[in-house]
Image 1 (cartoon, rainbow, N blue to C red):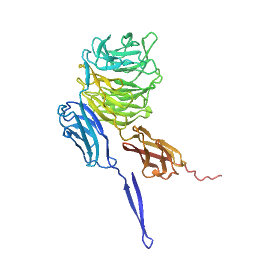
Image 2 (image 1 turned 180 degrees about the horizontal axis):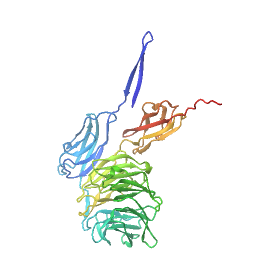
Image 3 (image 1 turned 120 degrees about the horizontal axis):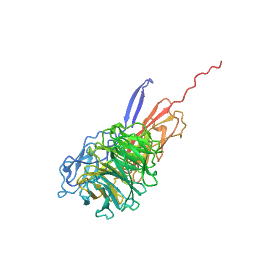
Image 4 (image 1 turned 90 degrees about the horizontal axis):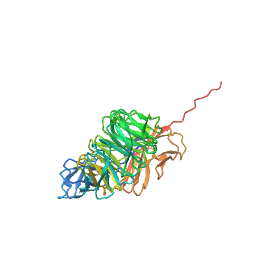
Length: 524
């Protein structure tokens, strides 16, 4: 917060001389605690996580680690944590360290070395993509193999059991319908459709030849009996007919589609187009589709992988060493609200937990991210995956996961213990406009709360020049408090939210729409 004031002193003769006074308010920097679980044997130079650090207007000169074994790690000024010496669980498998900013502010850093693989099944070919039956008992594996996809019984929490194969050559990708009755498998330039009403015994219904060779994705729509299938030339919309065959309904003019996701309401499709970037389409009527806005060119020439939140408000775009989070509440005005860096350049898949609090990122290892505050995602764990992680499917909620690991087969792993820490609130800044002659009590805008914490937000406040002209209630609703200063063009304020873990601030820019003046009128 900043105040620009004038002070005036008067002498005995009544003379005065105004003096400008500038006052800036700063709070202490913040660093939030972190509990990490990382692979045993992680080598020097490997980034294993990040502590959330907020400067709050101050300069961060250094962050130091202390405690038994602290020499095995180093931390950057932005909170990035790296291995300094190759880790050995026989020497030390648990670290309880203290991170200190500027020799003053501290937070706890806990690090556990773990081997989380429960079981491995290797006789499944080159495992690439996974999906599970609706009841979670059968795992379907696209394996690039000559003899078709593989089925694995995952009902036993302690082992993987080979169940059988599904006919088809060189399956590259697969997806299951929302109601769990259909399985689509893409192989070569074809898509095969199966009835899996009985998940353990698929029944082949039909095949469909795509235009051009198939790419990496096919996705079922949620309510329409249709699916989107990506090809090198375009993305086709296919609909199941009464006899079980797939019929062409329409297409989207996106070529080289590396991934496709569909909003839960079936209105919007997002496509990772290798040559154009991310492209959004209106598919509310599959017969008449249209692009929404322009492309997002920052993602051109990147093998991006996509995921969409269950409420359809967040799009996750992973590739090129990071994962970006976009607010897609309004698809034609999408905006980036958060980013997670420190990931491998090549990312194979992103899997979101059912409750939307974590992202499991499949790459050379499996990376677990806390996304409960989408404006500030952070790594909370890393699991070493022999063969690398191609895709991850969560089982029993988040207790276990099946990981496709290429030629190394499929691993069953434990994913317990990656807890979400309490942290300061997460907000989205606002920029809005209000009439300059608005009456006191006029609603201005509501601040979106993206993370409140388990105990909720204890207080909101506004700060900055002119903050007294507005009020903000406990829900983040901003209103006018008194007549506004019509001579100013805008108010550049800060919204500050506080919970039990700390405070966060975001910009609140309120522009004034001037009142038109009526010129002198002469009646002739």
